[in-house]
Image 1 (cartoon, rainbow, N blue to C red):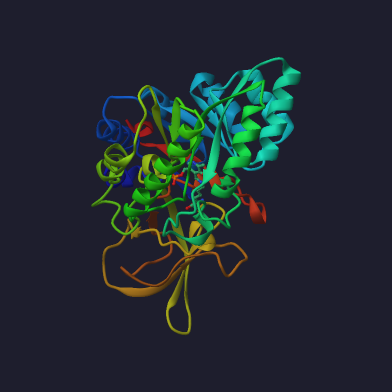
Image 2: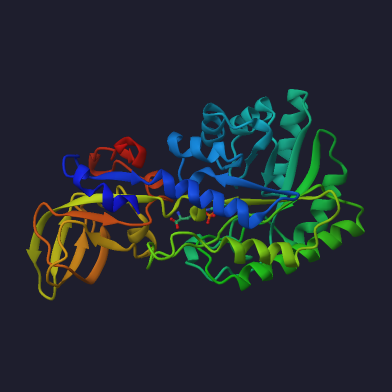
Length: 385
Ligand code: LLP
């Protein structure tokens, strides 16, 4: 991984910063595309994982579409060059302004999450005088087996319409004049490692499709969302997600109609491993059971450990000697601002450089300026060439 070849150059750079390995990003997207193969398939990159323009430029080069969840993400996608015809707009709480902007740009389609939203889309389309396209997001009531905060396809989650609401939705759809029903959409959650959960999703997709066929809806698009997990424990060993297993689950089991395109919305699995948060040790402070290793990066740069108690692999780039147990914490005034507790690592000292791995997805994208901290800059592997 080029991070290790660049360590010397890092020494003169102010920390913390995000380091992106562009070679790995390209390799990852290429692997995903190869695993998917040719056919009536389309990957839409989920901008929410990382909307850095430099990253988006790379994604764009591979011909992926964009999956957006806010008006600003739609604008960002257009700014960097995505064709509006390849942009999807999802989210449970789209404002009228955001919907109008999507209509104005004539995006590929809206993933509609409630019957009330569908009525609003119909009304706003009518007012604009333009016909819009939508897919109905359906909550399949499948447990993704991931952290509860990133589980989205269970009945009590706020996303999509329930299977019980489907017949009501069908009558509403039949009355629409300014919106065209082009597909169904699902997304059961994120960081999904157990691929059998996707098989459960596929079973539900097939049921919904056959019900819709009974009502003479032969839809040109089916979108199964994203959610494929990455290896946070061994990012070096498994830097590429299991795209083969993931895509073949859908290709093997989904009943895809003739002339129907199958869409995926991947975020984390495409960009997660190419990003690393580089920090410096500020202080080592003895504590009751362990020592605190206090870094100059914290939850403001990578909130995942504080929010989901997720563990990112941490490596001391300056020292491989000795061993000590640390609570690796950030500088922010919150006890939750910790990257790891009770972690055995080489003995560290003030000034050591640390790599907090797998920070390419939902790292920079979820950064905040809490405590009025500066936004961390980004460095790309090709900056060193
Ligand atoms: N499509 C929809 C409708 C989504 O809600 C999401 C993610 C994706 C696609 C992309 O999912 P991915 O392939 O990245 O798993 N902040 C959390 C993750 C939140 C995911 C939200 N939705 C984290 O850091 O783990």
